[in-house]
View (cartoon, rainbow, N blue to C red):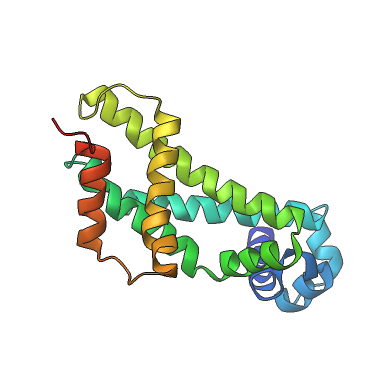
Length: 191
C-alpha cells in the first residue's frame, strides 16, 4: 500500500510541477492532487526538493529509454546520431514538465529549475558521449575527446533544428543528416 501511495504522490507532484512550475508548486497542492494529507507526503519526502529530485530522476530515466529505442545497434554512430538527437530533444521539447521548467527558467530564473534543465542536458551529453566512446573503440571514428565531441554534436544539432529556424525555413531531416555528414564526417577542407 505504501508503494502505491508513494507512486500516487510522485504522479501528483509531476502534474503539479508541470502545471505550476517548481517555484509555485506547494506540498499542499501536491497533497490535494494526490488526494492524501500533507503529512502523508512527508512520510516519503522530507521536503519539496526531494520530491522534485525524484521526479527529475524518473524523467531522465524515461529519456534514456527513449534514446535507447532510437538507436539501431547494427548501425554506426553517424547513422544513429540524427535519430538519437531528434528523439531526445523532441522528448524534452514536448514533455509538459520541461516546457514549464523552460518557461520558469526564462521568466523567473528559478535556481532549482535551472539545475533541472542542466541535469537534462548533462544526461543527453552523457548518453551521446557514451556512443562516441563506443564509436572510437570500434574504429568508426578517429580518437577524440568524447565529451567535447558530444557537446559539439549536440550544439550543432540544436543550431540546425532550433536556431536556424528563427530566421530561415526549417531544415528537413534529410538535410540535417546531410549537414552532419558534411561537417562532422567529411569536414570542409578540400582534399
